[in-house]
Length: 229
Ligand SMILES: C[S@@+](CC[C@H](N)C(=O)[O-])C[C@H]1O[C@@H](n2cnc3c(N)ncnc32)[C@H](O)[C@@H]1O
Image (cartoon, rainbow, N blue to C red; front, side, top):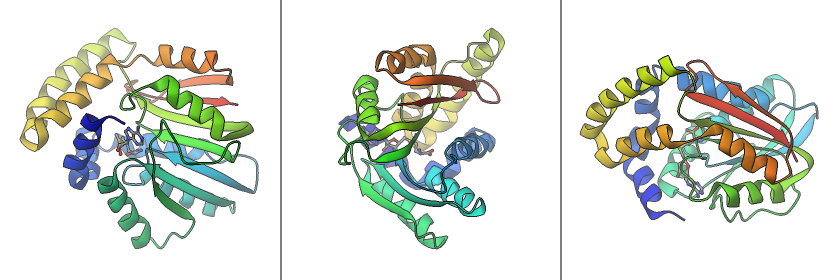
């Protein structure tokens, strides 16, 4: 477990949702909705694990969409940071959602049974987890045979113009962010620009996942990788 990442999320937990919406001009909500939509599979009753749930937004989006689609889903939402989980619990209780179970767990050593979940989601974990290969192993272990995963991430845009735009925007974001938490917003911008989505795709391919797809989301800074065990 990375102490640095753990501390970053503890120090920004209370402002995480608001600042995330502001810095992304609200588009983060759309990215999470697109992730939640992918989590609606053909089954009418199934189990979902949301890793690095943070303040629970993706788990909540899935619960809402599943209810609308008349699907019975049991969601387990895990994160290693209890400050983030406290906020997730508050949001879930406020919305009176009763099919999300929250647990404190490390994505690299999940306390979940083998071959148990039909769907695993993880939003914005990839550039924060210490070792993506170990996480990919855990993903494979907890998914049922033919289970689906959905990974929402952020990384350097592949389009040169957008890349330049975000380089400039991130200078501004670091300046504004330093008034909230210098380390956190430096890490945010550094980790995004350092993350290579194609390398991640290759790791997943090497681990034997099938039907791998990568979808660039609006503005190309965010992406969704999906695949099947
Ligand atoms: C950028 S936040 C994303 C939260 C949420 N998925 C969302 O969409 O807003 C990243 C989350 O990953 C969690 N995290 C980072 N490394 C982790 C690990 N090894 N195990 C579990 N959670 C981890 C952090 O605590 C944080 O809540």
